Length: 166
Image (tube, rainbow, N blue to C red):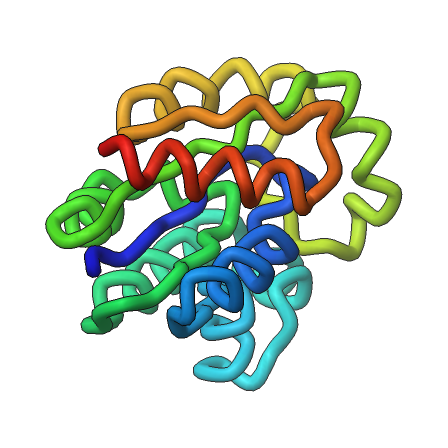
């Protein structure tokens, strides 16, 4: 089976849905944010704060390009779509699922944005970030699932149904 890659805004539920989806389908689960932390020995926010956004994005790209897995659900960081190389690498043997949430829902879910490791280009506010990323998510996705107001189990069901159709 192809890998399933989850993309979307911070707070969309990529990691949580990814774990449930992997269990449901009997697949391996990989969270690229955790992978970065394991490989660098640092938390995401520390990398962003100490090395800057560009360095973080290069680290994220390097870690994604280093993935060579099969039969896995991969939850990416929300900023993974900034790297066309990383996204083309993932797309080569995966179904890309965009977990779409509204701006208001993202704000509601993000209580810890200052410590969560959310990549924002200097001078950007949340609305700017969303406006910049949505076209990228739409560009790379094979499947889009609206999950603003569903619980995780319903989102997983939607993903499974859409994947079986693809």
